[in-house]
Image (cartoon, rainbow, N blue to C red):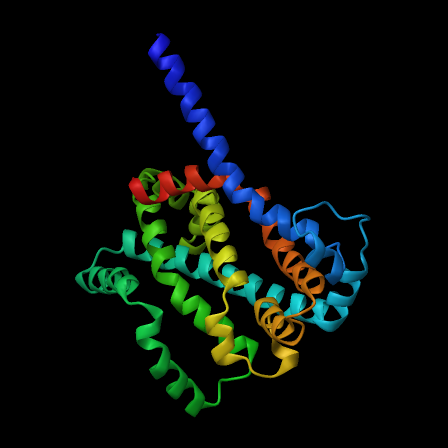
Length: 274
């Protein structure tokens, strides 16, 4: 019993130290975002003399924050809704219509997950550039739905297999159509899996830099990571302004994660292991 007590204490100490290693960089960025450049250079580890919001106001204006925020919000929202809804319907079709052709397409989608994005980056730029799909946020949404559907279909497929078919048979006896059966019987049961996919895709799409940098070039179409990148390149020497810009970029996705994080483990367990 005594040895178990020591193990628990050592584990808690280790976890606390690891937590501090993760939090200290965020704490330093937050504290320095309120300081002037001279104050940061004189003592970057100290607390700010006063919590001045001037850096945040300047960063919002120079980054064109609200416009970039709206672009990121539109791209992330439509992409995530498209990925979850279309992937759930596709997985449902694959599970309930077990033809050889459906199984082949399903395994093809699963196999596509091992292909790194860098391997298809150049062909993607050439093909979509020839078709004139660049500099358009809707083309980017279409790409995100395509790139995100494989993993989502795989997770939904595992979850839907665990749902008894008798539920659907009972609904059909009551006169529901296949579409009504999916939306009123299957879709509510997929809620934990859907929330897990929403969290993973929101974190991915909101923070993604590489794909928007290839597709969106005009300043008016930039997402928050792109706006932060160009803002950082322009105001590199003004550390307080740069750090306030980084905090502004982190805050929205941090709120989404804190609001939905409790569904991650339960959703992954139900969706991918069953």
